[in-house]
Length: 341
Image (cartoon, rainbow, N blue to C red):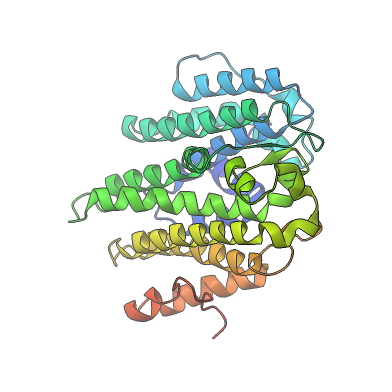
């Protein structure tokens, strides 16, 4: 199926990620296509990694081929129709069918932007490959977990923290190249921003991941409280794992707090980019609030921020943006995000 580059970065992007599309649409035009394309390429690699009906060896080989095309180390056209036909949504099918169009769009960017996109996709795919190999033998009957907090931190960097770096470098190059900002501060907090969003996803998806044999809570931390990864399949163990789980909720909030400092450290004149940063932080904080109650091991509980709340967050941040003090207090660690009043 064919289309225009504009259609690829608008219509298709909207259908594969309705929430992220809100962020993309508010971005300044100078960086919107680069970030939109990087997201689509990452979504392609993620879809390939998650197509469980295709044998693991074939997924790993296809990821390598896709990474080679992204890096420009090979030019042979990719046919992802075998993966596309196994997708449950028409949007995911279309995404894989249009892979070559994405590469043509990539070629239209400046050499510097292409390098940023290729670097972040290299890191993301390394995390996906690591995940596939780590959980190669995992199943509900044989749950496999990460070993240490260091492995968890490394994983969150590879699949999301690196996006904070990419985002920062792209913004710096196109939006405020001459601004007097501390680059080390932005990069460090941008990385934590990405890690925080990924950790929120990990904590939210814990019950479903466990039923696929994957446990991102490190084994050494579970062992210390007398639990094994398989014990987390039983909702009755919620009270035993809750203190450990809450410690990761606190860590996620600390990362989001770093992301908030990052957001407020950007030039006030860059309203669009600051809003694009604020929305996922406030949505993530709302998700953490929901995860603080209920049984976190119950698979029937799907924690999700309502679309109406998302729209309230968007409206509130735009409304209060002219007031620097009020807008900066929309997120305060340890307090419920202010979206209702």
